[in-house]
Image (cartoon, rainbow, N blue to C red; front, top):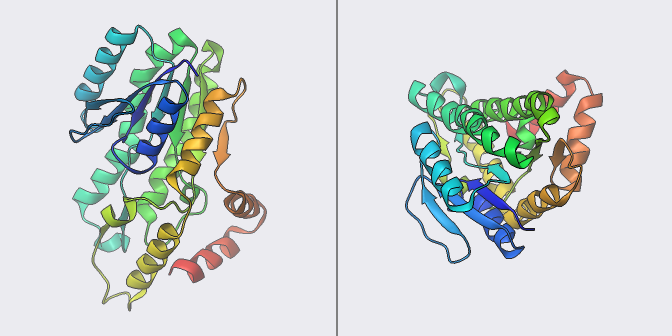
Length: 260
């Protein structure tokens, strides 16, 4: 795969696994993260995805070095958990800025390069974007936004030869679990928040390897006609598919029993 690929959030988790895997397959990979980091397998650039000027500077540098950009993987993200009524305005703004607004802005920057190369835009969403999880309402909302943004964008750019795919992982074992911000309100909700977060953490830490998602990204970049939406893991494909046929009230009942 002789491609120049940009991966955001590449210092850990799914981003790191993706950057390393693509580099091992022959891609020239540039990983972007908000903190300074080094990796022997790919080039590392510092940029905060919520600071669009720093992202533009990183893209300018990559293009100056390589003369093209063939694919961009929008992976950077964060999580908050807890009752919405106790979520701070600062954290609500932060998760939407990081997970959705930054992804939209980076996609806008990337399109100039991807139109020239007839390249690929891969956005990392989540199963939670289609099966919203109680006490992760803001996270679920941002990932639903990623899904719908990707579907709409594909309709805009297909005529230029740019292919858009949204990849939806389920529970994945990464440092994302420990980094999740948990808001207050536990006493008011009778311990439900703590039980919900504990269930999330258990499922994630017993979830799939981030390399499973990295493999999905690799397959998408290899395909001549990549899927518009790809859910990672057979069980998650089943649940997402089932959710489309069952009444919303019943789906919410099941999710409430699992997570609330």
